[in-house]
Length: 176
Image (cartoon, rainbow, N blue to C red; front, side, top):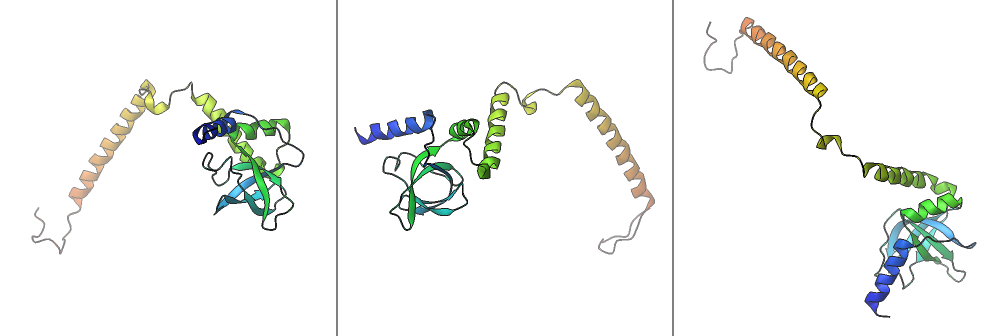
């Protein structure tokens, strides 16, 4: 398999399949990249450690902070304690949550994803208010506000005429 074909295969696999969790799999959240395909993660137990990205994901899929991954622990590692098994996208997170296998410590992030997913589905059919022409009630409100502003401006002009004060910064004294 050529490199381009392999990259396309991995990208399609990550984007299209739902992942089934095994017993030893741990869901973790990526905290930061350490370089050389090492990432610091926070797992569902609250432990923070470094995991490695396998060669099949390198240069094919990119990780961002706060993204969720499935980690498979490795026994022989001192510093690197696991390997990334699968990268979870939003659909996979919602799927695992529906199965009831989503960790409670990451529930807040999953709720944000569900709200965003619902908003995205609802907004596809709707038009933003900014794109619609103004309604008649809005025009009436605008006219009444303009009238109020006009009366306020007239009051200000009369007040200015009543108070003629001397300004020392002016070249001439005020004339009456």
